[in-house]
Image 1 (tube, rainbow, N blue to C red):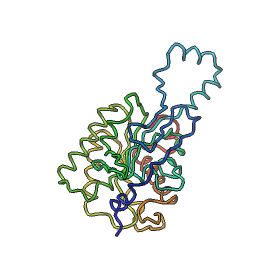
Image 2: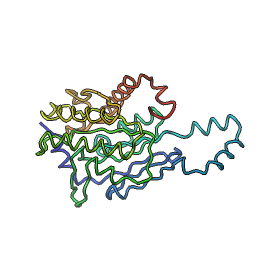
Image 3: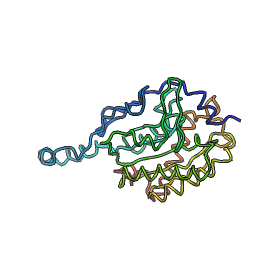
Image 4: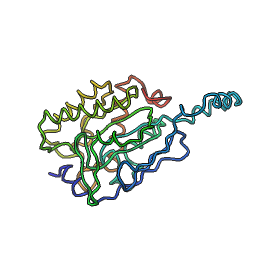
Length: 277
């Protein structure tokens, strides 16, 4: 049976892919480069940084129709934290990853800092000696002025097979969500339940899933239970036996959107109409 950890180890030599976001979106873009996370370049623009009086004057000079158009052009900025499933780095076209499909569906500006091989408490070193940090350390390396409108966290599969005790794993997952809330105390957070590929999931993944769910809810996040979207469906997985293909990413995106609807009680039109809740 192919495990995600074994697959990730084989892929440590992969060069990180540059993730493009349309420049026309007003909130900004994130570029994932072949260097460490600290070198990610963000062009996020904080609306609060604009002088209020200048903004008010410019708005007053616009017609009502222009004001509506200007308001509609500002898309909510959503930060995605996760692993290679989330980054889509093994896809021929990373824009087919489920995070981009969701963002396109809801009109979100995607800021994706996901890194293959990582997890809530798992980091890897690539062949160039560069450390791909775990989720907690990803937070530490984000730009200080980053202010997303919402955050989505996915992954957990790479945390399986750890030598750490279950108690230590639970503590480290708690530490991540505690750090996330300290960094972004008022930002809506969506947490996707950890899932596996088409093969049978590891025996320790259900425990990790339970810890993620508990910690996420304690942190006031919205937990999205999507079940097992790839289970027993090898047609949704790439030839490596692990990562979702384009079709698999569509299925995952649909399941996450359905879970968002159920968790928030809103349909997609409402979810896409403004800042995530």
